[in-house]
Amino acid sequence: MHSSTIGTSTADSVELSVNGVAIDAGAIAAELACHADKADASHAARLALVVRELLTQKAVENGLLQEGSELDDGTIDRLLEMDCATPTPSDEECRRYYAANAQKFSSPELVFARHILFALTKKSTMTKIRARAEQAHRELTQHPERFEALAQTLSNCPSGQVGGNLGQLTRGESVPEFEAAIFGNTRTGLLPGLVNSRYGFHIVLVERRIPGAPLPYESVQESIGRYLTEHVRQKSIQQYLTLLVSDADLTGITLDVRSGPLLQ
Image 1 (cartoon, rainbow, N blue to C red):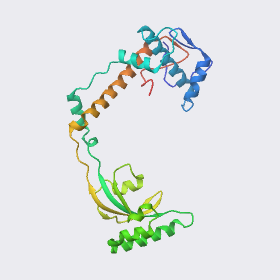
Image 2: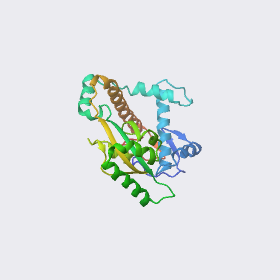
Image 3: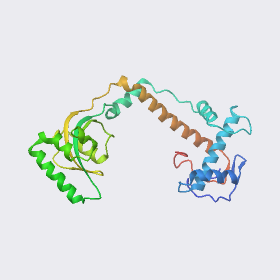
Image 4: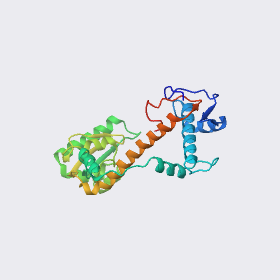
């Protein structure tokens, strides 16, 4: 087969064939619409059609599909199960992964916090809103016991009705700017400065923290096994597709199977 760099543009007018089976221009045009966002849509469309035809031919060869029948996802799955058997990771392999990635396996850090939001509006300038927030922050620095009362009267967040109480927070539940201010440190009490987010200025009171704790291996063993199995399966499929392409007689597309995965 001809070999060049993956991603090389191929003219739409060049005939595309896989082991002597021609893929007509209509099929190429239809597939092209599925790859409009790619840098080289023509190449991506042709590559997808080549892989599909190779899988079709292999499914027929293995008795999973009748000649001339349409390849479906179920047949592809059965073909890959037959030709890309994925070994189950051993307990030793799972334990090694657990030990090497201990930081991934812990319960989430919990933060119990209150805030007072001074929201940005079209009616007030940012300077005025910030000034009001800073004035309130200075008052709370001197009188932290007034936090709930000020939240009820000043906050533009619905939580103001309950004294600014946000309850129990974990990572991913608030906007990144707010999250960066309250997670990853040990500070409690009134934060020393305003927290600036896309919504406005926040005065934040951290009431309590519960640090994340390591999860025992037994509680994550199953998820580790699934992850390792899927990782090996994807690698096996890539190697399988590379082998099919390497052994195929192709015209109308240029590929270099050494440059990386055929499909993402």
